[in-house]
Image (cartoon, rainbow, N blue to C red):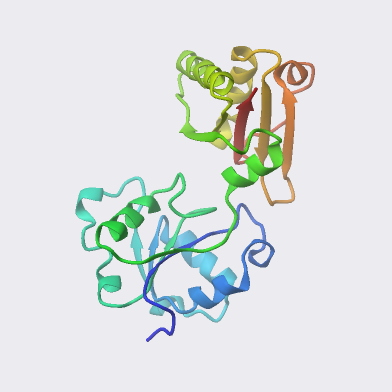
Length: 238
C-alpha cells in the first residue's frame, strides 16, 4: 500500500528529450513511485517516462488506463474506481502538464464531479513558459488551442485574434501541429498588422529552444526560421 495520500496526481512530463532532473522537482519522484495506477495518453510513452524517472520501477506491477482523443468519454465513469477505494492514481500526458490542452482534463473533471481530491504537481508548461519569455502582456491572455487548418479560415481566425489583442489588450496564444509551423508562420505574417507583436517559442527547455518576439514588420524582413517538426507556441499582442 502506498504511503502517499490518496488523490488524483497530475504528473508533468518533460518537453522533448529534456532530462527529467532538469525540469521536475524531486518531490515528483516520491509521488510517482508511490502510485500503481496511471491514466495515460499513450501507454508506451508513459512507460518510457516512468523508467526515466526511476529505472528501478517495476513496470509490470503497474496498471495503465488509456485516455486520449479516441476514448469514448461517455464510458469513463468507472475510470477512477481505484481512487474511490483509497488508492492513489496519476495522470500522465505526452508532454508538459496534464489537463492543459490535454485529454487528461476529462479525468480531472470526473474527479471533481465525484468530489475526489486532485493534486497538480509542478512541471513544465510550454504555454506558460512561452508567455513568460515573450514580453507580451502576462496580466491578460487567452489560450486558443489549434486554429483552423484551411488557409482562408486560418487567416480569418488570426485576424479575429489580432482584433481581440488590440481591443482587450489581451495576449492571444495558440499552437499548431509541428509539421504545419511554417504555414502558420506565413499565415500570421500575411494576416496581421506590421506593428503587431509576434512571439514564436519552439522547442522550449530543449537544446533547440528558440524564443523570439518581433513585430510582424520586423519578421517580414527576415528569413522564416526552420521550425518544422519542432513543437511551437505562437503569441500575438499589441
